[in-house]
Length: 222
Image (cartoon, rainbow, N blue to C red; front, side, top):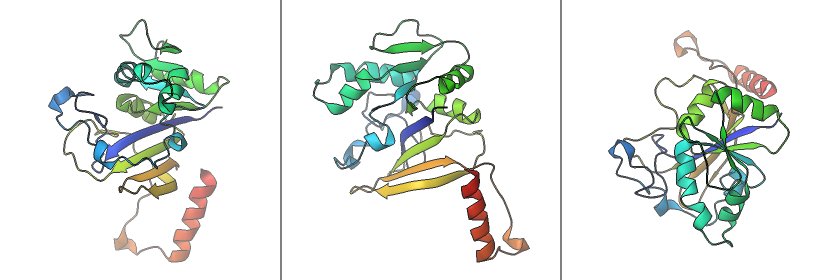
């Protein structure tokens, strides 16, 4: 079974709306589009987190597809990100789009959870979500996402669409990789780690040995 990987840029308070520019997604009267720009660092490895779609098939929500379709086909052919995104096979979750103009694009028919489940068991490259907040939340609730690449920027936006909105399915995650850019962006990779474990310091804190045992168990289960 191929993996489903979700990659997104977020603010420190979890907002992922319109990172790339003021007109990218102004819905809800969001006025801070383009908040990513001042922190961009050419040393950031987009490919490692799947943001360029290299060697993967894309799974996109309607809004993200429309933003990408209006931009990437018109970039210079020697732009490496444009080259890989334009060439990638693209699966678009939408109830309203009937025909897609961007090459190698098709609409996911029927229920999106069932459609993505079928994609995961089909042969092919790993599946990559970029942005697409509503789609991430739907597939997270269905426990279909195998890896989360979250790049957290040192800004607080206060309002806007968030990676996980109120009512998101509770789930523990395990950090498997993390690095910081020269501009202070925390680039982290997480994988699902089962149900959330809770406790209380009022009942006595666990010993270091017990904490180590739990960490080993979480690692074995992932």
